[in-house]
Length: 319
Ligand SMILES: [Zn+2]
Image 1 (tube, rainbow, N blue to C red):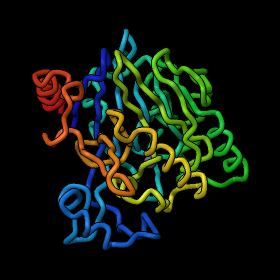
Image 2 (image 1 turned 135 degrees about the vertical axis):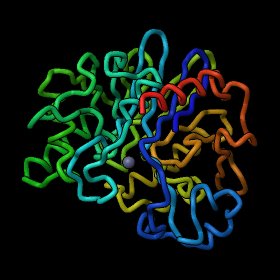
Image 3 (image 1 turned 180 degrees about the vertical axis):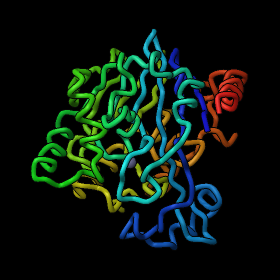
């Protein structure tokens, strides 16, 4: 699935590597209370939660920003042919490269690869296999790597523990060894386009990336929000939040910042349409998925409906 929006002068595109009802709710959120899911059934059921099989729907989404001659890929999914512990991520074989090309982000078009953090499902397409080696997928790009996250996972790697089944070695180190890395930290202007803000908690060095153009804003928030349930209950950490106290505090602060402010919130794991606006309701927050026709401010409409359709048909041809 490829969906585009216009944010000021920028085009923002979501490309889903896959999505489906894969997560048992209280395994992803140990504190989960299913009564909350039922309470929000109209919003969740059939899209973000399949009640009949009791699974939360998760997408692995890659984001593309094009602005002022830059083509920026934000987080790079799982990748093909990678050995992973999670069966659904192990040895994937998708046509994501064709979809990236259809979305205008072929290897020779991407100028920058930006990572919010270095979990395996955010770095996979950094590299592709070349014989016995993993080589950069985008050899002409600068790879912007959050330094604090790199140091965290490098320390684990030094202890001899494989990170996420080997993602640090097969998807992060090769781009460093190729000399393509530029370190990022909170406060940086990334790729002349994005403002990096600390989003510590899900991982120690996670960064959120803000795009601002012509008075409009979008924020690529990595896994601050792992599923729409996180908007409804920000105090429920996910089982993969490395620093639970920081994760919950970051999530609360993030929601307070984006709520009712017309900011396109672009997480990496929301089911289609992948992005949302957050608004306050009662003591908490709810979200309006962008693309369902119920909350679609003019500036957030698909950049060009015709072009989105053209992208899809191009990808079908490539397949
Ligand atoms: Zn993730």
